[in-house]
Length: 271
Image (tube, rainbow, N blue to C red; front, side, top):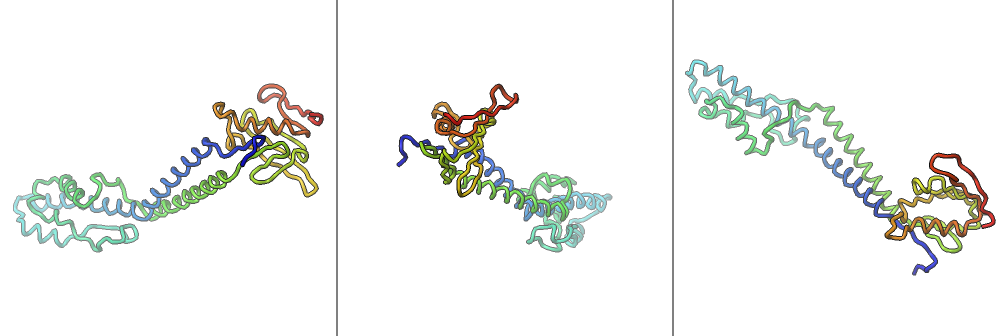
């Protein structure tokens, strides 16, 4: 149980919300780029080439029936022998039928007669789950490969963000009358040599140098990430810093006047 004299600062909602938003963003991008790189762009390629076939079929039908003498059987016999002009298989969905015959709707003489291939495409795309407005151009292997590369980048950023979120949620800053504990490392006040508060008022960051017989080091106090400065919560980070200053007897570094003015170093050894 935490004693009344101990101040504990855990991860703030400000940090967790930002990290959660970044996780959601990188996670969404990862999913979208993965879909595009594995199946999405290939499906769009198929839509693009099949849609182009409808326009080509309309032009061919118009030329063959220029004199109005084309019969239904003649058109059907011709159309059933045609195939969709497609790129190499690696740029198409894995289950694409190769060679792909013209869609059955294009072999229907009565449907082709009005020469409204866009209406036939609307009917066909709706029945086959394709976009009514296909991509303006096909995607080559480089563009498909780029989606996978960006997917791995987004996934890496997602995992890095998740790591830092979990690590931060498991950490805390604690201050009692004898020592400051930073993420599990206990630093007695008597071992602190320098307290740098030049960024405390503007960024909520303080640096503490410490030395002991076992060695020396520096720790970073991030008040925005741990504790926070919300007045309705009695400014936990500010209370933590007051506890440190009340027990600190080393060298204090802070601005004596407003932002970006000259710095000064004062001794706090007799406090």
